[in-house]
Length: 130
Image 1: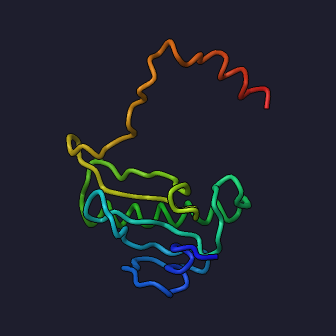
Image 2 (image 1 turned 45 degrees about the vertical axis):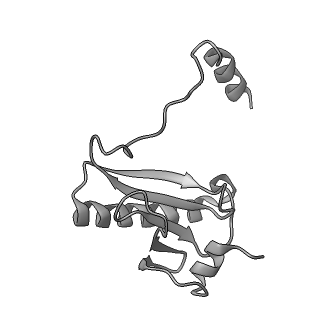
């Protein structure tokens, strides 16, 4: 498998590592949206967070919390934003970055769907049934 994040986790590609435990690493993002933008990456290859065993998911989130606290201490932002990724790069990772009100990166982009396009009741019913 030719996975960039697997190579980073194995030390086969250079990175700016700021955290490591037996399960995952924390590195600076090479294309940051803000100073201190970090990725928390499981060492073993997994693409989707819902495919992780519960213990591994808990370990990943504990590492993310540790790194978020480092970001908070270093940059004193209003928020530390977190996104769970695994699409463009086919390896699960948690993106963490500092954000201050009005900086343009704080928060999730709003949907372009008009309210009438998404039937919220039907969506809720469907999700409750599966």
